[in-house]
Image (cartoon, rainbow, N blue to C red):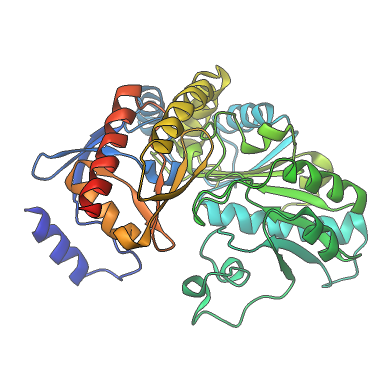
Length: 401
């Protein structure tokens, strides 16, 4: 079938919870994808960081293929021979004691919420059902009813109430706002070290360190949602590393599955994660053999520091090129191989700019009006980044004409 046939048929028989660009991808390798007509595109979204290590990474695929021939699922009712290696390796990568594996990022965030509340009642001594968690404006932690209940995005919230209580929303980037929101019943502060969905918003220097200090003073858990920002994307293993901050809980996902299977995890020390006991939390597929094999391969890729260094060096080059785009760009933000580019609204919406880039062979994604996000796989080359920047420059030039 042609692209238009795929799109027409798919739109006729699926719920419209996404508004995809009109491209139908059939294959991919490295940083490139190919559509059903054979056209090639540079993938500058990378599955919202799920494909940090590129499409079809040979190390990840080899681990998956080997495991597919042996064992894919047992459930956690039994042990299997890939579990110990994965949780040990991930715990060591994070510098923590324990790993609680799940599947999706939203599941991991829900897990962190449950763990934080349980810790608050059993360790901190918060009165039953009185725990609260401080969260940020413009957050994006997933799409479950609990999570959208503390979103400030009307599209995410509208029509899905009533919502669970127990969350206090404060301004992102203001450590003082966090301090003022904390009381004796606060069990955690949950934040993204860099807000991806909001437009790759980087907080002020010192913000994460200040929140860490506030949490220590108030005996409150610092929970870092590194689902998009972690595992090499920003030039360090975790975005928190840029300020030398170690959270109490890492929330991980996306790239942990290597672009092959959904793998997520909450990682922390025993004094926090140890509050979860048998029967209190679980998942049929969480920590399954295939997921553990893939996740273990991803941890191995990150141990060398190669991908973090690539993101750091190529990210500096990308941001240098984006800063030189000239008229039509209102602002550029980001860190490592991750950028939010605010386009002058008079030149078009983010969607229109993304469609124009698609026609030139670059796939990107819009967010919040006239902002586009760029997050290519970490295997992208300098020449490919330069070419992508040239295409964006040409799109802006045409829009100004």
